[in-house]
Length: 317
Image (tube, rainbow, N blue to C red):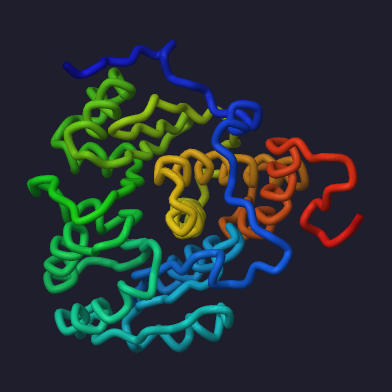
């Protein structure tokens, strides 16, 4: 029998509560292979910036390597914008989206990666949508599904090769489950919990109080953040943060839901840091990325008690 959680049963995320869900730990001699490898399938001729934001966010979240798979006409330019990337050019349609011939290329990448992000900036075309329907189910890695990757699953049966993390905003959730937005808003927590159980997936239902529901976990609610997080590209940053954490946590055999919970909260704290410095007006998604490393450093200090003389990770006594 499904447990229906009321508003009062959602756990509010705080750094104090996150002490029980610690971030991955690394030794001083760790290298990029220890920090996980992420496959990011993103971008199009019309929306290359979404891939750049997601990639930068994943790197700032601490992942060791990001392999970006993008349409060939924009892949090199994205690689120049983010020189830390490994770039995988994919065949493209006449409209600059990923074409059907991309599957064989991507299959060569799966074994080398720990997690994937599918969706930021992929844009719409019949061929790309057809690929998304297949990849969303068949990618054999824990995978964040964002934007068009979510909408490609409308009317699809949930059967995935590995854990999926959905990151819809209210309108995307409405299309995905065929419910009006007002119906979802009236019962957000029940709908989120039911979705996680029925789809056997993790749901990040974005909003002023973002919900994180998982099949075998308690429901979490994030109340941190600021109105500035509603800026263009903020969702691409969130997908990248969660993906970067997911690769690290998969590498260390940590529950995928922890990546979603931490990712949502770090994204919100980065927004608060931006707001403190310069206010909500004019906040950009790139501003969030610039604050992320400092926010993670702060979060580590707050959530891990250190012994006297133990290093902080900054190579100082």
